[in-house]
Length: 279
Ligand code: C2E
Ligand code: CA
Ligand code: CA
Ligand code: CA
Image 1: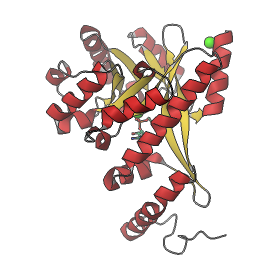
Image 2: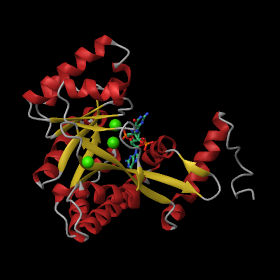
Image 3: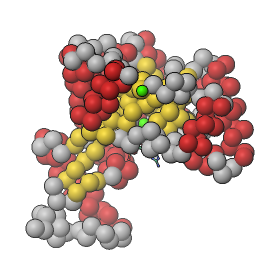
Image 4: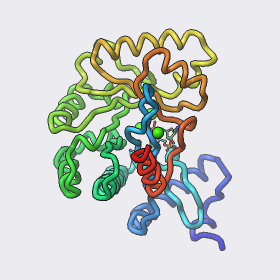
């Protein structure tokens, strides 16, 4: 059966006109897709390098459209950042994430925190802190259950406003992670003033790392810098044993990547968590 929008745009045609048609089609249905629970939370496990213990997860949104199938976040997130819908979708993700943590705690599974993505658009929402606090309280959790991932490039757009907002969130007890660190332009000088707890290395570092001797030196330098600033370091996009060994050798703290596990539905993550508790 052809979908309602099938007659307007061709799924595999990447011309500008077709892309604009698809963006319009997505914009038309995003609200109802949310109401119909087509957006789902996937969790990607995060491990401590030292003992390879499961210590957390990152919540990543998935959109499974009944006719178009799986839609990549790389496609719809930038659109939702443009049209403002990301604010609503992110709140949905935070709420579902907290509901999952509540469920695990109620069932006596190991207490764990989960990282959620906070879009740059959310940061400019004056009610952000109130919204986040309301969500954690609704599920009877504390802010420390949530790590807030904010991409490096958001910090550089409007440093003073971002720093104020992020400091407020951190003072409330949320753990702050700088996502995609090294992809953008944050100067080392600024890093010292950032109210953050964790650096999350951009995955391009890890993935070019085995190829280029150069980036190995850079990674070592970043980890030394993080130590000096009392930040922990998460590496994501870890796909091979070789990459893992290298990260362990240079003293990185946590890893996330296909080498350990892909993002998975909440019920699968829960099984993993239960198994971890037995170990
Ligand atoms: P990100 O926050 O940097 O997330 C990491 C991306 O890397 C995820 O892609 C994840 O599935 C993928 N990944 C994990 N391990 C590996 C690996 O070993 N190798 C490779 N090649 N990739 C790996 P995903 O889920 O497609 O998300 C893409 C981006 O979309 C995210 O990048 C994030 O910026 C955004 N995003 C996803 N979910 C949300 C959300 O709920 N809210 C907001 N605001 N943004 C989101
Ligand atoms: Ca992230
Ligand atoms: Ca990232
Ligand atoms: Ca184990």
